[in-house]
Image 1: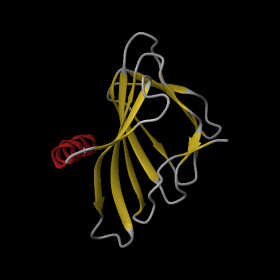
Image 2 (image 1 turned 60 degrees about the vertical axis):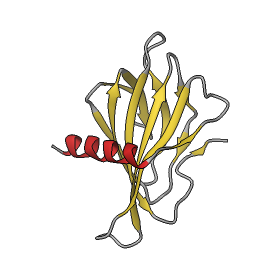
Image 3 (image 1 turned 180 degrees about the vertical axis):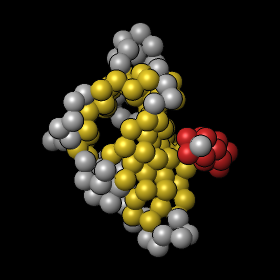
Length: 138
């Protein structure tokens, strides 16, 4: 039920217009904020939906998110390899979900396939004042 709610949020967010950011790995990944809304019943917090698309073999560098961010992610297409903190690396397939607790270290986020694309939706509950959702490891 919650997953259907999140898909509804994404569809609503897409109709509002998406903001896209790309970097040097644009051919391997695309990250798009598809929803950004202040939570009226949780002062100072917002919900942001982020669509992450990986081309074949695509990956994101190891990273963290704001300390206030609770993240629920679901795989929309394909399969992704994920490792959060010191948990074992796991492959999630279409329809499967995972969470990142505030302060987590996202060590691995990658397409599990070298031939097919993958997509995931990450829904952040984060302090409204946070403008940078990802900090790559140095």
